[in-house]
Image 1 (cartoon, rainbow over the protein chains, first blue to last red):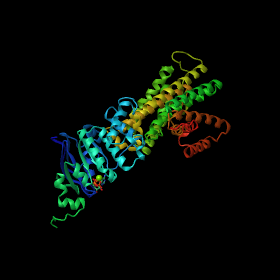
Image 2 (cartoon, rainbow over the protein chains, first blue to last red):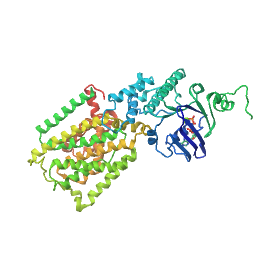
Image 3 (cartoon, protein in one colour):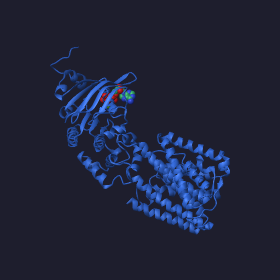
Amino acid sequence: MSGVLLSAKGLRLAFGGVKAADGIDLDVMEGEFLAIIGPNGAGKTTFINMSTGYLKPQGGEISFAGERILGLSPRAIVRKGVGRSFQLPQLFTEHTVLENAALAVASREGFFSALTPLLRPRWREEAMELLERFGLTGIAHTRADALNEGARKLADIAMAVALKPRLLLMDEPTSGVAASEKMAIVERLATVLRDARVTAVFVEHDMEVVGRFADRVAVWSQGRIAALGTPDHILNDPDVRREVIGIETGGSHAAA
Amino acid sequence: MIAKHEAVLAALLVAAVLAAAAVSPWLIFILTIATAKGIAVLGILLLLRAGQVSFGHALFVAFSAYTVAFLAPVLNDVALLLPLGALAAMALGLVVGAFVVRYREIFFGMLNLALSMVFYSLLEKLYTITHGTDGIRVSLPRFFGMALERHAYEWAVLVTALVLAVACAVFARIYLASPMGQGLSAIKTREARLEFMGVSARLVLLSAYVISALMAGMAGAIIAMTSRHVTPHLGYWTASGELVFIAILGGAGGVIGPFLGAIAFELVRVYAAASFADAWQLILGTTLLLVIMFARGGLWGLVLKLTGRRA
Ligand SMILES: Nc1ncnc2c1ncn2[C@@H]1O[C@H](COP(=O)(O)OP(=O)(O)OP(=O)(O)O)[C@@H](O)[C@H]1O
Ligand SMILES: [Mg+2]
């Protein structure tokens, strides 16, 4: 629970005239759960894409565990211990949920090492155990393209967790999950991540989830971090409430 | 179990081929060619799993066949020519593969086609080396040190082809069940995710490509040793297209499909050519149409349906 795990300094990236990142400075501390909130198009996904090597920033620096990762491929960054899940789940749609998980498990240890079956006992057991932790046992043998949105989201995260990352970047893990199940699922997810001692950054639109699970909250706005602090502090900030959460607060007014 | 079912059907198929060859010896040649093509098509099937269609794999068939033809005067034994031809094709597959696995779909298909046509033109134009369209004759090789008379030699090559076919089918099954083989369909459905799992999609595809080149090489060597005459036509684009055609005809769902497809293809071709001279293309086109419209799983899919199993 100490030290900076991921450090971003002055990240800049523009798409045409749109500044998706306009000087992002952020230190993610080892062991914390950091929530990213902010309106659509603020650049939240772009930050994850830059941190995982999918997009190359036009300026700035990124390091992970003290090592520069800027310019590395997604593959190299994953191998260093940065996992991610996706806003739109990225599953292998011709495979079952179990096979998806087993592919992730196998990719961690020797995808190319031997001609052993994907569902060999060791990989199968680890994959099943993973699905159990995520409450996905019941759909283990369902093809990924037949799942509902919530299940796809969870399977997508499970695959990222299978890689045993030190840092997991999750892009809207609860979008698409039915409101009635949301808290239970996040509770389960948080337990999995805490047990595995994974540091987590998650983009989230549900402030109840943020308030309950985040240690810190970063507020994204037009490619910048507008505010950063504890949930208590951030979620009660009138500017944040108005601009991000879309709620007018009764008492305090920001100067017009 | 599908595995047991497949093993029984494979055994029946091998037995049927041997029986047919014993009853009508003139079928030996056709069945050897069909078995060889089946092996090449098995390689095409691996690439199809990744959603990639090569329209140039005759390159590897021809490369191996010419390797055999060039080496035959000095190393005239099946036991040497066959592995050398196949390995030469595999080595070429590694070089070509390293380049083409960067591309997908139409670009992948067309690049393979382009490279195969370059090789075809070389075979045709470098007359002093290749004898152009006349091709090169291969004198009757020894078979593992034995000098066999022609009929016995032809039987020996057929049996060799069948042994290789079974070995390749078993290998392909094991490969396809492994993470690498399963990774092929992952390339088709969500290639980016593979990268985010730390896996190189290109390397996965390259593994399949090299294996497919090796298989095409085995086919080329067998064809050269049984027809004992190699011509540039072996590497022409229609020969590549034929492999893809057979893959679809036989069905890409299982490792026996390519052999069912190849045998059906060669037999129909011979009978069609004998009975209705110019109808071959018409039969080919119509069959392809029917398979695509009514039997997507190809002949293998039909066999599964008829025997009450599902892929
Ligand atoms: N690859 C791209 N090409 C062009 N523009 C892009 C690209 N990726 C993002 N953008 C633009 O950059 C801005 C930030 O996008 P980003 O996806 O990071 O937002 P976000 O905060 O994740 O939004 P949301 O909440 O809708 O997911 C948007 O205006 C978006 O249109
Ligand atoms: Mg987003």
